Length: 154
Image (cartoon, rainbow, N blue to C red; front, side, top):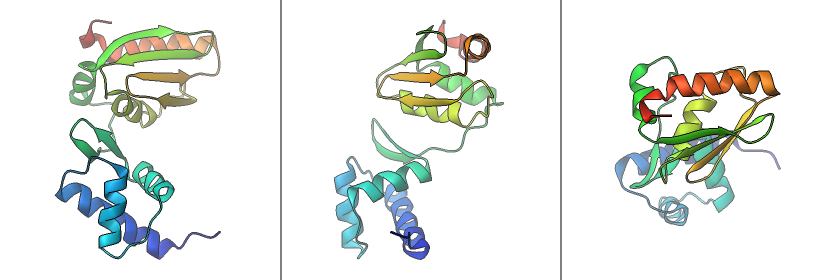
C-alpha cells in the first residue's frame, strides 16, 4: 500500500506539536490525541513515525532527541552518566549496560555516530547490543566506547 506523503507529513507535524506541548506517557494516548485532531492513525504508524522523528520514551514521557554530534564532549559526558558496563558477548557482539530507561538514548547516539565499526544496534530498557563485522571491528569499538564513556568508570 503506497504511503500518502502529505498525510504522513501532516501526522508527523501534529505528533511533534503534541509531544513538544504536553507530556505524553503512552502511544495509545498519542493515538487518542491525534484522533481528536481529526488524524486517523494506527499504533504501527505511530511507532514508525516516532522512530523517524527521533522521539523516544523517557522517564517523563515521549520526547524528541536531538540528532547527536559524536564529536561533542558535552553529549558524551552526559551519556557517560548512564553507562554502567561495556563487555563483549562473542566475536562480533558488544553489550552496553545502562541505567534503567537510558539504553535507547545511548543507542540513538551510537547509531548517529557514523562509526564504521557499528553494523547496527538493538536496545531495550537498560541494555544495548551492538553488532560488528568481526573481532577487529569489535576491538576498535570497545576502545572507542571505553574512551567515550570513561567518565562512567568503565
